[in-house]
Length: 394
Image (cartoon, rainbow, N blue to C red; front, side):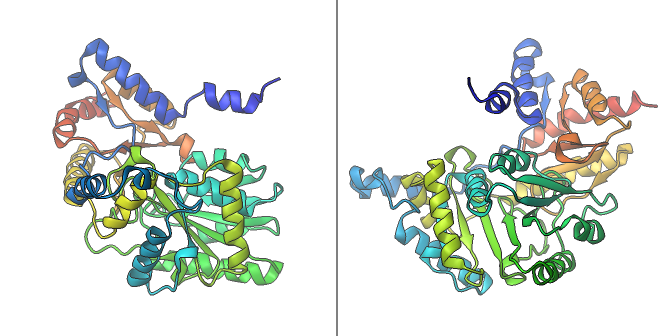
């Protein structure tokens, strides 16, 4: 007999991927100009020029066997050292090369971290709205995921509900800021509130509770908005980072896990991370891309393009009468559906060529996500359809 749970996961795509595949099929039927695909968080801004330059230099200067050969299981030593030093420079931490484990993107970072921490009977806690794959990643370890209900007025963390969710079985917390799907950045006040509660609960229960910071959107913020670095607020912090968005490299699958130098039993936890990577087969992240990111640590894509898109779609939709959360980061707009059933609302939108994701899968019924990492022109062309959708409810 095969594994029925894995069969289900392989047979049923996520809502996001299902919508993306529908969009490709629909474009062939009616023309791509009549389909407005806001489903997938696929960066539309090109990678910084240093990425192409780094690839050319590496290919021309390094022997092929070295460039494409295995690195150490946890990643190339010089790459890990450079990343640790860059983090220390930015955030006044004291990480070393052996605080870093190179991974195949943030998904692998999360899977390895959860596997390293969980002994199969634990609970992990996250806050709605949240990336739906957290449930898949957590349950794959045998643990369970508890979700703190969303705070609808500002989508910060409801600290009262958060404290209620933590029990003696809680092994870790997953926080994502800037947030997918809302684009909200958790404020310093929110982070202080969360970490104060965690510190008190650790003392009460007599065991560490780990704070897992999922950070693929850290560099994508607008204006002078601060994204608190959680290692500076809580010792038992593990950062899961990806260059998919910060360097516009989603298909290259490269990221890292960073362990706070103040983490309780830090050396043992790092060994667990290495062991989990081994058990999952996630050793030796792509060697070329490791060296590329080493050369591009200070680079970011043109965030101004995302801001331009955000300002257009947020301004237009709010003027039409939609209720939207104004995002300070990432490239998502979270919109209140025009009826209680967001799935029905998104189905009606599909009839007009608008592909937007219902919020139920994010733990946010009644809302939907619009990924505005698309061309500015497509957003402009989609606006009459959004207006027609609004008019259909009047």
